[in-house]
Image 1 (cartoon, rainbow, N blue to C red):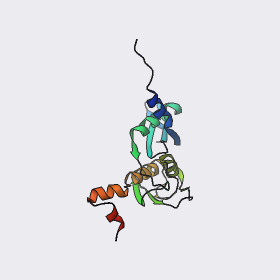
Image 2: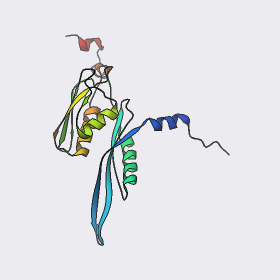
Image 3: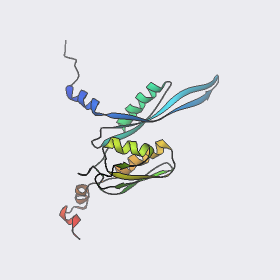
Image 4: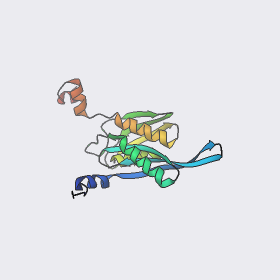
Length: 174
């Protein structure tokens, strides 16, 4: 019989992921016999090394909703460029629904200055020094998605230089 053990690298990769539940909400659907209750879980998944995702899961029980949220979060991962000072390369802005999020790099030692689900997204992305502000809606799902959009818009100096087809040294010179 063939060896059915899992690949040790894959097992190691699975244990690298951290997940944090941002919100669990009891929702209901009106059906013929009354109200059918279920749970919606908003989960942020990240490896604290530049990958993060936000997922939503809905199920009849909380554990099932969280499990589905984690799976959804892993499907929607983004890569975040992190500088040597554990910050982001440049200020950025993101929108999710009516929520708007502004994220700015900060000096080493500042920490993560952000609130709510934006803080969770930034921490699980591995960003250590950053300033963020939620503008507009206070909905945790929309704010998490706005933060994800803002982080997805980040570009490194190398990417900008390649896009403009110029040497990276020319970006710094005036």
